[in-house]
Image (tube, rainbow, N blue to C red; front, side, top):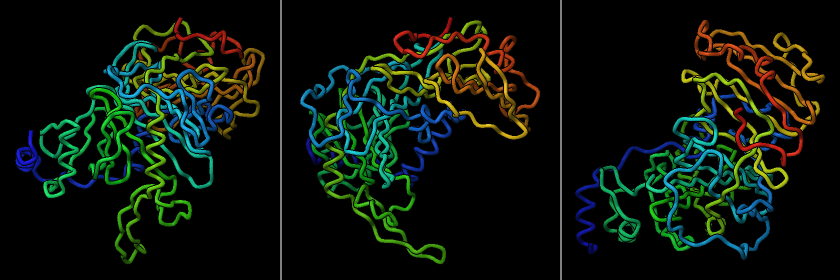
Length: 437
């Protein structure tokens, strides 16, 4: 298709631009909170949950296969293959697909699979989007987030139904006279569609790439499969942050009676160069499964693993699950279980709700919440056979006061759930890839 035909087609098909979108950082933060719904696993177990921001985020070490998260200024020599010829149409829940290869000093990688769908026990769920976060541990509050979409999950389009190839979109954007309406990366999994594409970026490992208006880097990492690297800040008003230094584009804000206003802030060339370097080192096709430090028996026949994100952290060269959920169809996250390394002093006492209990000869805290529309119980133990344990159970279907969880006989309390647990000891080498027994 030549330029004139493409321009004419787009002007007829794209139509008026879509309405303005909200802040991508705020939207993602709200989405994370909505998706997880449950309380942070091991909320009181600081060593396990310390890396959590919004969802359960966990540091990935350099010795994990396919996940060499470096923190120097040299791109790894064993970088991943260039353009992925056959990316998956869905990601599995138990095996993360993408990982960072290089990160700037102060950033640590973290996995958060998102937009999980399907039914079945743990290991059979799948995801349209996998999110790998990299929060900074420095005081500047900066954050990087990698969203990897499965093949076929995204398309470049405008406000109409027109679908463009990456090459056509690049030509359209480069022809500034024709660029009267914005193009978007629209993804069924929810990633990559917050801001209009603003310009072409250098190729990333052989795949076409774009900058969006906010300064996110978007590229095709494999045939029909797209990824996005998003720089963000924990601080909501970056113009007041002395560390901001052009981390991403910020539109001008007019002065009013209730706000001071500020000029537009332009993303710096240094920030763009850093994003390109991070994106070029991303690895695809990891195959390291998660392992669990427990088994669970007697699960009601109608209960299934929850179709929501799960978290995991590396330990001794393995990816260790840090939060697993299951339940009936009316409350798929009704039961949450997390088992990790012992975390002495990690359980918090809540006056009027908590009481001390003894489990397997160790001290634990049983907390019962009995409020309108919220009836749940948590069991927290900092050190049981070298493991920290956190169990969260809905005693009633959320937003109801008298509807017990279907088939919950034998699982009617957090203590009863603990009675169905088999603890596998503190050595992850003895842990399992399937906790159901």
